[in-house]
Picture (tube, rainbow, N blue to C red):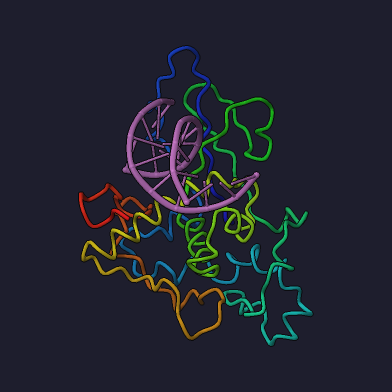
Length: 234
DNA sequence: GTTGCAATAT
DNA sequence: TATATTGCAA
């Protein structure tokens, strides 16, 4: 379900002609349907229980969930007592998300999974699909401004093949986006961290629709994060 | 070693 | 354009 895509760099030798295939990225699963292409039901149809299951389920076994009075339908909300004990990497790869192969390449038809990329090949470029980004945002918000460091985010997201570098790069852009949003007059509907409520993943239904930043292509990163002269310097 | 960030590369 | 990489300072 949650299938972040990886775009394998084509094995062009010599002069790596980049950009030749960068426009061929596509999204084939629910991401496309739920992408923020101006669809208000963005967060309604999207992840819900099924989407978050891989993240929350292995962390909260049924017994524990029962103890906390949460069920599978409550997968969107993690108990506030969620801590590092449940966040370590688990071998339950079948429960965790995993990069998909990006086949249908135009050039060499070689495909490779992100988890099998260790064969001396170039690392595949990951694609931050809306659902994956959503999970990222959840992790960031869950960890709070202080705790949202790449390492912790990677661990929380629990996505196979997702590296700290991936997250660091994404986080860098994400922060720029947030900063720009706050200063640039664009009121972004993303509470940095709710003060009173305990640190837990926000319910998806309660999630603010990021439609103001959505781009019509179905992929909604953080708008353009080009440094706007002033304002964003820190 | 990790993190954040700017600059740069692909 | 999106993501990766690098270099540098904390």
